[in-house]
Image 1 (cartoon, rainbow, N blue to C red):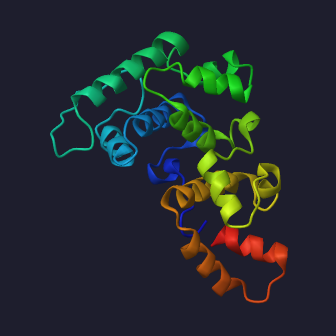
Image 2 (image 1 turned 60 degrees about the vertical axis):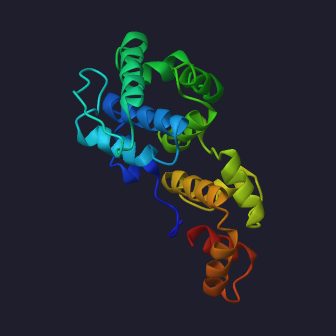
Length: 211
């Protein structure tokens, strides 16, 4: 987790643990932007939040240029997203959770009903919120599962969750997903091997997870 373990919420200073309507909306914006273009999503989200678009109630006036991380079409999509959150859930995505009956599958389906949010976006939302919305814990997306298998950690989310504190599992999930997307298996394995020495199997797994 040391190499890749920051969650998107941490990078963008989104206070997910507070579960406020604003924090949940910001996370949904991140999910939308990763659905649109993952290469510039974090920068686009930071720019939007820096300009004051941190809640769905009053979208700020934003300006965009070709050198920026998002354009007028993307701004329009964020505006439509904000409108949909207001119309469907009175600006509070905790209502989405209630409507989904605290069921992970139904919550994902409701998230994907927002125009522009695809499977990857829903995965990101669920991955980041899982320590707060317990019905989603433990969750690993397909990239994280692939990375876990390639690193010799297996692909059982429950087993991997037992190796870290619950509040740290989103970091592990994010770390594995990034490793899977970047194919950094050899780099991570070499670093873990240099740190683990003669440790036994379980200790090696813990070293690898915290690398």
